Amino acid sequence: MDFWLPLVFVGAMGLALLLYVVLDGYDLGVGLLLPFASDDEKDPMVASIGPFWDANETWIVLGVGVLLIAFPQAHGVVLTTLYLPATLMLMGLVLRGIAFDFRIKAGQSQKGMWNRIFSVGSLIAALSQGWMLGSYITGLDTSLLGLGFSLLIALSLPALYVMLGSVWLMIKSDTGFALKARGWARLAWLPMGLALLLISIATPLVSDRIADKWFALPEFLWLSPIPLAALLCYGWIGMALFGRVRYRPVLIFFALAAICLLAALGLAYSIYPDIIVGRMQIHEAAAATKSLLFVLWGVVLTLPLILGYTVFVYRIFNANVVRQGY
Image (cartoon, rainbow, N blue to C red; front, side, top):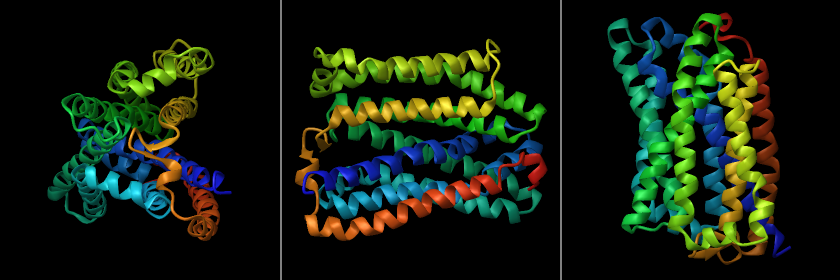
């Protein structure tokens, strides 16, 4: 029990953050795309995420909550080191929330201002999340190399979000606007792939430990399906977007989600058994077993409820955004 219980909480935290990246990623992507749409297109774009975006953000609250309760030492170190980007991320999310509500109530003369605030909030949140992820992978390294890697991830994550947002709009829009969203996805496809390639090259360079875990034999052989599967998904997405294969937009979205899942599995392998790379192990940072057992009941009750609510909302509001109205 002492061994497995912290791993259960790490798994719950990882699942919550993975779902956040995929689900809140697409509505952040819609916010990033908003400046490139016409005035007539912006209301349907925001309507496409309207029923979901609050629920999507619940996952990051759950993930950070599990970190705080189950691994208080790691929580203190991570959020102390990443205080500035975490604060900027929260400011971006607050700006998005304010703009989302006020743009509906504002007159036509002010709606453009709230649209811009919504987009700026989305960009700030995406960049901050990328910086935090990059810093976490390097073990919160503040050297020039570590900061450069964090900057690389910060500039790369918005490309993934734009892809997710574009494909989401393809799913939720009529034929005319879906073609425009497909054009946005085509433009983002190559930058996203380049970003993934650069990250794959840079990650072992900034961490000798990660390099040793991936490139030693025979580990390299049985780990190779992870990058190969990600490459296969990426190639299929390109063929679907550029008309080489027949597709449904929802399949492209699931392929993007699969890339995120494969990246998460690779990251989990890279850092295990640490919870902060090179600084703190999972079992060292875990709270007392009695505390974890007490909190486990909350996680067991909360996680299925959030999952069930998420599925319910997506089933209720699964119609085309044009038919839903605004």
